[in-house]
Image (cartoon, rainbow, N blue to C red; front, side, top):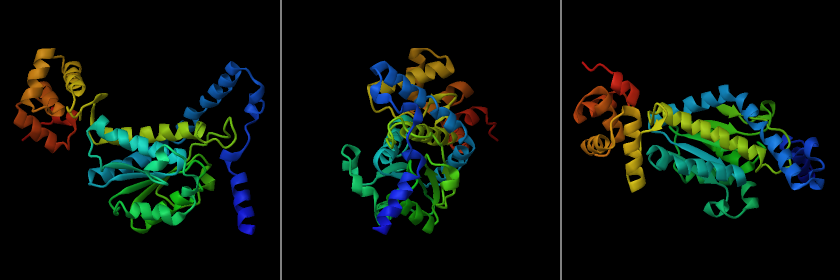
Length: 308
């Protein structure tokens, strides 16, 4: 009974579990008035993210450094947090041509929890550690725990295990930094305040989490050379749509016409980065590949490099 009361008190004191004074009478509003209340609250989220940019930047640098050295990024969470991690991870391969092992999402309760709530799955610390062990994580990897309330046992267990084997750790939570007592390498704490519907962290907290994860992986992929200017250039031409997108990318960044884009892509064996360097630097396929290898796949540097 004492442990239950302790848990009750802990949850009751969380920022994410407080009542929002601005939505106290939302149930008496018209549909449009309800939506304006929700929209007004949503507008506060980017400002909460802005305050965390220095910490997000540290997280990006940590992730990019690990990925460059052959490590992987693992998101791990429960409920909405877990689903958002899986979503972000699943979108990296088609967007950036990355290996599917590079960024992975783990959710309490397994894949079934993606479409059907598995509420009790978040309560056991050992399960978080178990699910990470199943991925054979090592000290080269990065583990990013996601828990709006900070206290999710499943996530805490995973992060503790990751630290015990020397892996770098991040934690994304919507509770204040001074309440973040779990030791991690980088804590990212956008405090979005009470939800419109008390405790419904799928709302502002979920939006904040999505924005943070977008920033972490997008910036990391840019640092890995998967973007030139603001264009995706590690496209995999495994569909007609992506073949045409590859041609359009060449046309936009180099100024060649449609027929020339098709010729260069064919000469580059479908590798967009190689084709860009061939055109912009006026070099052969072999020289373009050599430059890209020298610059770790960074197109801008490959164009500008002055080989010996």
